[in-house]
Image (spheres, rainbow, N blue to C red):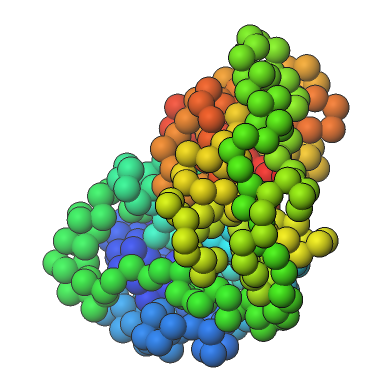
Amino acid sequence: MKGKRVVVGLSGGVDSSVAAYILKKQGYEVIGIFMKNWHDDTVTISNECPWLEDSYDAVLVSQKLNIPFQTIDLSKEYKTKVVDYMFDEYSKGRTPNPDILCNREIKFDLFLNISLSLGADFVGTGHYCQKKEIIINKKKYNRLLQGQDSKKDQSYFLCQISQEQLNKTLFPIGHMKKSEVRRIAMEAGLNTADKKDSQGLCFIGKVKLPDFLQQRLKPKKGDIVKIPETLSCYKKYKSFLMKSEKIYNAELAKPFKYKINEGKIIGAHKGAHYFTIGQRKGLALGGSKKPLFVLFTDIKNNIIYVGEGKKHPGLYRKALRVLNSQTHWLRDDMKLNKGESLKVKARIRYRQNLIDAILIQKDKYLYIFFDKLQLSITPGQFIAWYIKNEVIGSGIILE
């Protein structure tokens, strides 16, 4: 669009490269910025998303497109807002999502504000999601929609952004398949055309998570306790499930909790804060017929409770809850009042298929009841809820 300025966050990957290319072809005045957010390579696996290589690729893309380019250092802010938050959450036995935090705190906050200070009308990103406007009662709302490529859809990662942030954002590749993005990059002669997608933590890359956590969370030896499938709490839970779903019992949203005498000590670990619910790897235990999975981490007493097999009842729950203070409505016109309910589709992790659920607003909590039992509901993670293919809101899983 002639006369409109767009700042594109060039990450050194193919998606942001093509986003910049498309926006320039559409007539926007495009500026490329590379965000330097991480310096410490000691925990990054060799040759996986090194920031120096990424910044060099971003420079080459800007030169090919003949657009202004600069690097900004947000490493201090990233450490405070994302990394420190991660350490704090893991120390409490919770599992944060750094990609959602990075979008909320860095890309769509600090980076957006810097872009606007440079006179930008919009920021452009390489996210696989879409935006459409809708007018309700003479008020404009921006709708955050899933990306056309269901295998690459990133709407879940943007579930915490606001209407104001969405209003200033363009998603030029959200209506495309990944294969089409790569084809465009190839035809445009962009050096990132066949570059592999980055993996791991946002801006850090693929890391050895135990090594990363041990930077601040020190090892502490504790017991691993195996829990049988016959505990009374499972029978009680099942009895709640047998009742009419219209009751939506709040007990279903509470996690299973255990005592050490309810199971058998089968080994030792190096710190309960290194593990998360549903985790299978890293237990370093053998001798069981089926794989062992983490059911619960008792941070206070430094105990890990595990169950045998993926069908263990301790891995499954019907509901969860979110504190009102940690509930975010992207569409505040659909926000629930006390006693109200809303049928939605939801997901509790990236790439999970959308699942039927109902939201019920109570005094202190928003309850989410699923049509089917869900595997490994994890405190600290985000749940996002949708109407059809639109993100309506999200929240942090309490427990």
